[in-house]
Length: 148
Image (cartoon, rainbow, N blue to C red; front, side, top):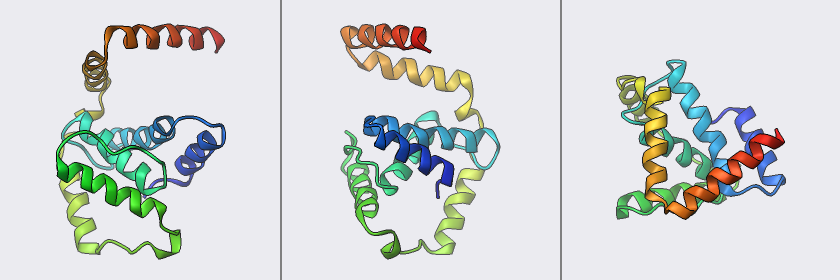
């Protein structure tokens, strides 16, 4: 369950008209913090990001389903459905399942949230985009960096 501050930051982003991926970024950021403070681990930076995106969908952020296996798309659709439901109608996951999931994550490494691992993931992700797209992102980053 995401922190109240994370939910508030995501709602603030939504009010400001920012994109769903920006709103979801708050949840991913929180997940990275959880790993760094030792609450649990993750097998890879991609897993940490996936957990954050799943929480975002369940909190009502309108993210498109991911490309990939049918099972992953189905899980994303389930998360989105939970996000559309009224908060009072959400059913609780069984304590045994929640404990098992938390226990599995606790056994994983904390290095998935290291600066090095996240940098590697960002570079790998950027390479999947076209050269022009990367160039535009760099120009925008430079512009916003000067504004701040």
